[in-house]
Amino acid sequence: MENKPIARTLRLLSQLMELHEVNPFKIKSIANAAFKVDKLPFPIAGKTLEQLEKVDGIGKSIASKIVELFETGTITEMDDLLATTPAGVVEMMGIKGIGPKKVAIIWRELGIENTGELFYACNENRLIEAKGFGLKTQEEIRKAIEFRMASNGKFLFAQVEKEANDLMDEVKAIFPDALKHFAGEFRRLNEIITEIVIVIGTINHDVAYSALSQSHILNNVVLNQNHISGELNNGLLVDIICVDKADYFKELFLNTGSDDHVQAVLERLSTPLEQPENEEIIYQKAGLAWMQPELREGTTFIEKAEKNELPALIITHDLKGSLHNHSTWSDGVNTVEEMALYCRDNLKLEYLGMCDHSKSAFYAKGLSIDRVLQQHEEINHLNKKLDGFHIFKGIESDILYDGSLDYPDEILQKFDFIVASVHSILKMDEEKATSRLITAIENPYTTILGHPTGRLLLSRSGYPINYKKVIDACAANSVVIEINANPLRLDLDWRWHQYALEKGVWLSINPDAHRVEGFLDMHYGVLAARKGGLYKEMCLNALSLPEIAKVFEKKVGSRV
Image 1: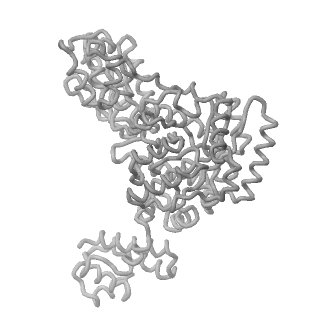
Image 2: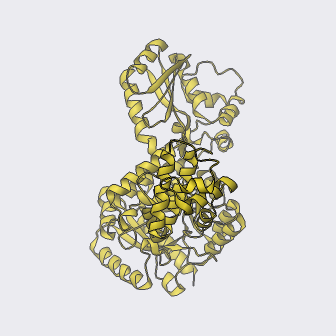
Image 3: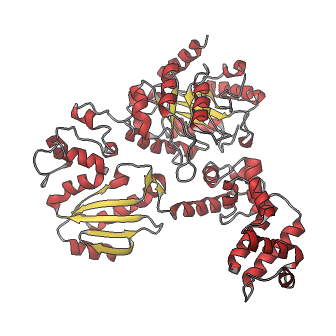
């Protein structure tokens, strides 16, 4: 065993001891020993207890731990500490910029147990609420986590959208007369991007390669036949395909859809693809209506295209209000009035649904019953004050482990609508998670099921659920399902939107905004909704103010 692994083990032991607030002197001595062992000019593997005791900075107690490590491959004291520490908390200690003391605060005061939750908290501005954290520290941690996430070659769509569009702008500047368009995952609006693909219709491939390799757009540029490959500064892979203009639309089609989608279309062609003048002709020859790029995943929409029954996909302009938002009453950054004015004046919306955290979310300053009543007084005052705009009284009520909501009925009935969400005890098997959600869905006060799986993309898998049973329960109880528009969530997954719509379940594109800028996340919710085939007639917050008021009133009336 080399010295470095031994030093790393001792360092982890000292960090765990600091996390659990063990004797400070003991922590310091083990941390010092880890440093000394790492710098020793000779290996210590195989040395006896007596020999180790004589090494500067080790001593008898630490020497016995090192011998135990030699003999068993572990240290009992460290195993005991690990047994009481969530694996995600241990992982957080490896993030640049935060040590055990800060991790302890994040874990114990904010209830955050893994890197994914920490990244989400940074994006929601929650870290600044904890002692010893400021905006600068929060931003440094967020960037460190982003760097880690990128190291696996996968990126959130929202992380690369600007870089991809900047790249396209530069390509347009280099080839003003060429045909060019995104293809692949980015054109299909996938939530996770592993590569940016651009197809260029140009005459001279060599000129294209020379121009791109000298433009400083890409790093590590490689020419492979008609593919110019490289990567952006953030490590995102790029593949630029240069073809003759006559072959442009064929290549754009072939490189846009998923493999099974492209194959399904090609199988319907009676003649070779050759050189189509546009993509519409390809679908026309296959007996299909032209399909939006975001629908070109698998064969889900092929039958609808064959019958010319593709949905008119929802657009941002269709949205009339924003539901599920947080203010300074819980863990938001802006006041209710600031949120309302931004929606009315900047986004030209008709209504706002306030859904601050409920009392069980102590880490997010969840509202006690008294504070619920106080907030309602403020909303009543603002509704008299704001012209041409309405604030609905909502709450994001925690779904407790038994599936119940965390207020008594006499308080639940005071809200215009209720978003029911799981925030705690996320480690469940499919049966338990499904049962927990269905119990909440069957509660007559539940209006919207919030982020159904609790997932955080690229960092935390959602708890497993039986989607069909959950969606069927929503259909039976007239409960809307949220498409949480936060780019880290996008939950309900677009792959289940069609099943929900077929069952008559409405969806709602909710930003889960914790500050005014958070409303802009509705853009990503719309993109996810489009992939799932959502149309405005089945989107709750595409309803006008009078229409949605009637929906909420009907729900309240059904409880009687």
